[in-house]
Length: 218
Image 1: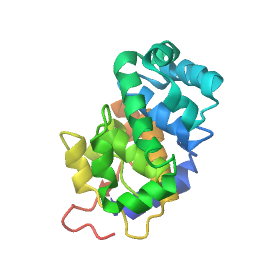
Image 2 (image 1 turned 120 degrees about the vertical axis):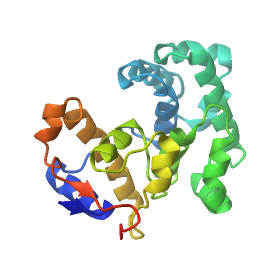
Image 3 (image 1 turned 45 degrees about the horizontal axis):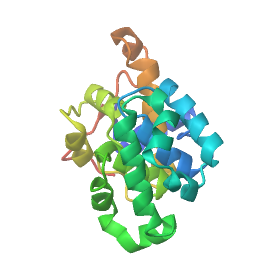
Image 4 (image 1 turned 180 degrees about the vertical axis):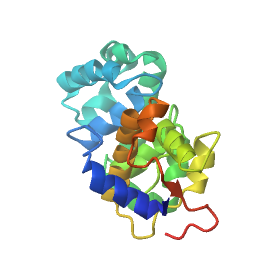
């Protein structure tokens, strides 16, 4: 069966149900989690988030007030804690210039938001897009490793994040909530069905192909 991007989302959502991803109680926690999970797995992030919650209750001003000597021991379990502490400091320094008003940032920066995020230390394309989708409610596509594996199976191979990001155009009527769900569904599907060739062949997308890029109509 041939699918558009929208049909792929609808098929995954109908079959798998809502994922409710990103797992967090606040956007400040999501920001921290997105930085801490870089180059590690979520199991190593959980103790760091627990420490940060105890120290700051995820209040942005309190996170911003932590210096490196205070922050690094709290996030040690996530690895690369020296670089990650600098990334957290850079992001919260930037947020502080807007008094931590996320709506004001989105309104002020508009189409420049992704560019601004990519200028921050330790923030690459994937983390910037996670911020756009989950923090600033922008309906964007997150072309992470899970997405690249799935889209390769569906006939849209890519060599890196940026290549797939440029290829995928979300439907014009996609909401921020749908973009969040799409990311969660892709990650869940890849973990469930793309670990082995057998699992893929038994999945509900095994006979699916995305409509060729030039013909794909959203």
